[in-house]
Length: 370
Ligand SMILES: Cc1ncc(C[n+]2csc(CCOP(=O)(O)OP(=O)(O)O)c2C)c(N)n1
Ligand SMILES: [Mg+2]
Image (cartoon, rainbow, N blue to C red; front, side):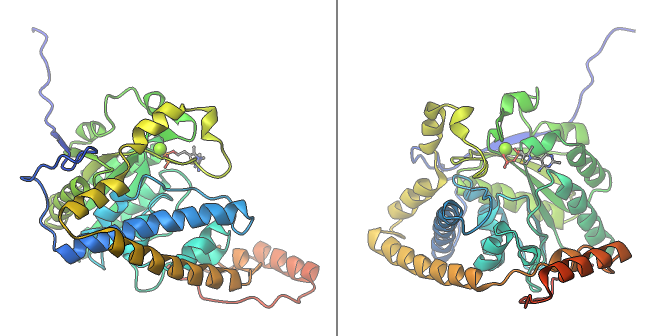
């Protein structure tokens, strides 16, 4: 028999709509109401300002180690915009713009980075999962949540996020494999920000793209300019609609860049060049969207100055609320299991004795899904 080439199906589309130098593809441009475009910009700006505030708080010793999301504001926001309230947003830890759009309180976000258990408690009205640091572990439970949605036929969709580094984890492949075999309503977004701490993208995988891994799972994929919110909005809408209509999962690779450090615990100057960072600063999603809105006469300096002032006030209030929170040292025992194990109960007693029982914690019930 002659050797043959196996015809493997699979489509990887690439979507760019608003380039970093302002070129706009008007045929692909999503038609959003003006008020929504302005609102999206406000969330992007809010994210940038909150991120900067958290960095300062960390430097002043007022929160713990912080992982900034500067430069990655467009992708989670563009996805969250198309989710319904009852859909699920399953994040990693760099999806701040999405958390805010979904309605997570700002002080709760600070509490998470401040090391308080309550930071992992999602407001009851939000159908999401908490910030997830064990890399790619969230992909498996996203696939499971999506399977549940399919079995219940409740029409909900799950949007899950991980990083380029996350795609090298077994959890990522297991979750994706499961999701595709069972054709569950999952949209998997990989925020390819070019680095996994100090490991560059080219050492992460020998694949030309991350999106092409979808071909092996037997699904279609999209590559979007993750710093172009218009492209993200278009790709996310297609993938979410497809999932909702029973079309199964989609993998979206969002090309972006972490403009700041991995976390406040590392110094990126040790592993990447300033020239590289500068080249990506030119592709920053925030000024790009700002220029687009200015050309549309939806934004000007005055409107933005009012927005900034407003946001600053909101952040001041949130920081004050965060700092009023009194640490509950017993929460780590209480929230570990639905029912505390005898060993944890013993440890809790030991801590109580050591602290002299004079702790008056501020309690709020953590919410668990299920
Ligand atoms: C299972 C696991 N292994 C290792 C780590 C340590 N770690 C934290 S972040 C990170 C890199 C993740 O890179 P990527 O997935 O690209 O996300 P990014 O931080 O770039 O957003 C690693 C290895 C971890 N948190 N979890
Ligand atoms: Mg990364």
